[in-house]
Image (cartoon, rainbow, N blue to C red; front, side, top):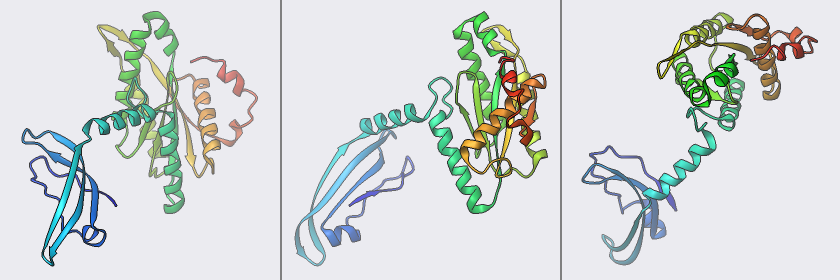
Length: 262
């Protein structure tokens, strides 16, 4: 039987109990533990214990085997990081974003609380990238990611889903005014000049807003409506946000809006 114990504090002198009901019932115990060395370094250990002889009701002979699996756990962590995180900004990638979005939908259905999906597209990022090069373009994306994180709560999710495209799942949204306060904060944060190794760069962003369940009842349509709203924000002149409206869906000017450029 596999048991994962709680992580002890760095100074805790942890001793696994060999009087556990699992050991008494099955005669064996196996688990993964976090322990602190005398240098206060955390290590991961796989430990197994088996009863080899019972001398009386109060005494047992137990064989213990353990191995250091710290490197294995670190490899697992790195694999998970690559699978769920954007390598440039360390933000959640599209896969993790969709997982968080599904969780938000499930929580909304159970608790009756609404949330907002924001599509955030940087304005004129391509021209900055072409003029200064990919090195500065990448640095700009890293700085943008940091500012977006500062604008939102820890309970919200900010993700990078494309080259200069970001999304945010904003939970427990009270009303449109509450959402608008957040988007104005984002617009103001991104509009502040960026200092990239002494080079001053100014950009803005366009934000599309779709609300669940008011604007969409499934994830696919929620993504679609947020995307439409974002292009509508670009049509309005960029550096602003736009809530999804039903008339945007099927609007013949939508394709023209996408031709406006980034």
